[in-house]
Amino acid sequence: MTAATPSLPHYLRPGLRLVFIGYNPAIYSAEAGHYYARGGNAFWRQLGESELVGRAPGEGLGPEDDALLMDEAGIGFTDLCPRPTVRAEHLTRDEIIQGAHRLHAELLEHQPRVAVFSGRGIYQQFARHALGLSAKELATRPYGEQPERIAPIQNPKSQIQNPTVPWVIPSSSGLASKWHGRRLELLRELAGELDAQPEPRATKRRV
Image (cartoon, rainbow, N blue to C red; front, side, top):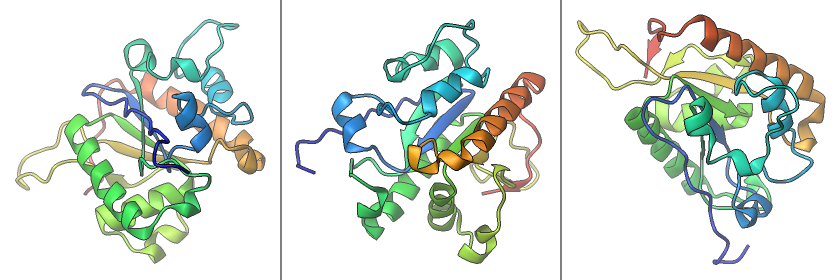
């Protein structure tokens, strides 16, 4: 990677239904200027099949839609770490810790209804460094909705009306293709949850 390799914009604002969170941009995607830009990545195909966006059959989705989905479907995008690399393993520990705290601040500021972590490892890093959970506590977590709720700390007698609910799904990378069937099931489950419950649910664990 060179110093000139761009990062990707964070598509975030208040009122979003969900935000997809990756580890960090791939260099290919950063240079293309769009999230999940490589053709072998299942992200856009599965998003179109999930019913989260609501486009008519045959109206495909692609990387160029990333900046449009906040208005069209209430969907945003960000990453745990902003620096593009060939592989996530090339990130430093300090970058991951700083990224977890920055991401936590972003979620607290914008309060999307759901934060979708595209990979177990992403949520594990975020939950350890930003929420104070232990690696042991996270090691056996299943995919899907997580028990934590991401919201500002308030007076114990007050109620948090709209905490962010974390979900964990498998990566859309071609390297994780054996999990793509399960990933699509989870996206469709999430679409059903959002449609069935227009108002945020009561909190579970506030962090």
